[in-house]
Length: 58
Image (cartoon, rainbow, N blue to C red; front, side, top):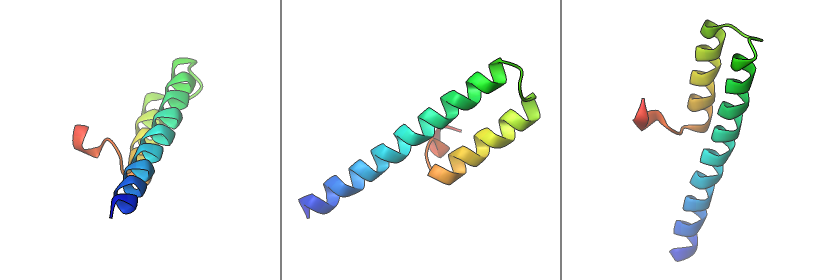
C-alpha cells in the first residue's frame, strides 16, 4: 500500500517537473519573440493537457 502511494506521488511529481521545464522553455521562446502569443497560448494549453497538471489552477 505504501509503495503504491509513493509511486503515485513520484509519478505526479515527475509530471509536474517535466511540465514546468517545458513551460519555462516555451516562455523563453515566447520572450525571444520566436513565436506569437496565439501559438504560445496553444502550446501552453497542450503541455498542460499532456501532463494533466496545473488544470486546477486554470
